[in-house]
Length: 452
Image (cartoon, rainbow, N blue to C red; front, side, top):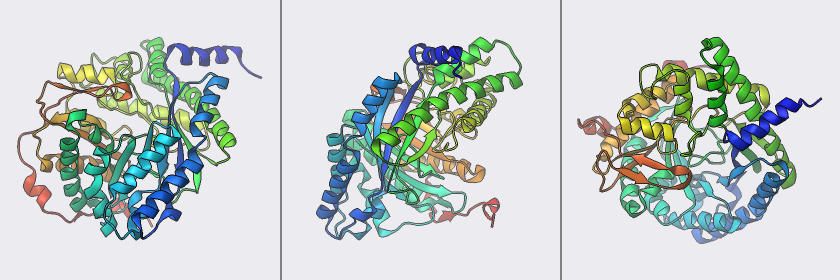
């Protein structure tokens, strides 16, 4: 029997606490689009995406209207393009990026992810071509997102790829400097990337996934913050229980939307990603949850412990609400997309070193961080390597989405608008990492990777 109080509670979460379904993402396999002629391949990609995703936005809007649940983004993820393009005789991979962009625009979605490569153990010729093409691909498209997985617990860290990605990030920043480095906001470098992530910019449809599937990402930092504030000065055991119960209710909303979208589109339901994804809107901040626990500001001592409790409780509550929880699932800490993080960075309490420590216990990693435009590529690579090491050693997904702010120094700000918000330019260490990055090769996998 339905509990009327729980129904009203859910309505309140939607109306006043910023609860929404952040994205419904349709994953599409493009493996059957491979062709030696890159233009033929591009045409196949465009036609398949449009045939599979043509109704995605329409269905998403219908569910919003009928269920009264906001669905903020409708997105597409595809097979890593380096796999699809391996058969192409041409190395002009931006042709494929523009095909993705056109298909996404025709389908009316917000973003399309999968201009990607999986290079944790080594680089194929196609992987190298794709990575080298990323700056041009992201500069010449609006909706295409790119990701590269450079490390895994099983394989270690591919430092040759890490070195390449530092150069790639800096070149992407240069080519999109007139657009606040937006290309870098659409590029994620992963360790232990997952194949069913619905969130951009890191979404791709992994080779282990079905032909098509629906993955849903929910969000609710405002709901959790309100629950923590109402809990008052209870002990940590009680606080964890409150967050778990709240995460359960949030995930249930995502489960309903995922199953309904799956039914209407006639494709399998994949997973619900229950990540707390903040926005720049006041009252929708992960940082404010940590402060509601008793910290004067996010970034002060105790922040990592508070985030660990939050991340664990969210996962436990979500797992009880759905049999198919996946993606990244936890708490995101993107600086530019969280008004509390922005405030903490502006005050000087939150810096990159503290953010790196926080990534040991949260989902993803150093996300939407702006650094001075003259930051060397080797420093960017070293930041990527540090974050990959955390992921590899701790057997978790970590990532870096960093924006060298061309023409900007520490203290200025990049404005992205919308959900991407604004990023204060944060300082990096002045001492060089160039000799370290120049070694190349692979940092071996840790001993605990040998689980067979």
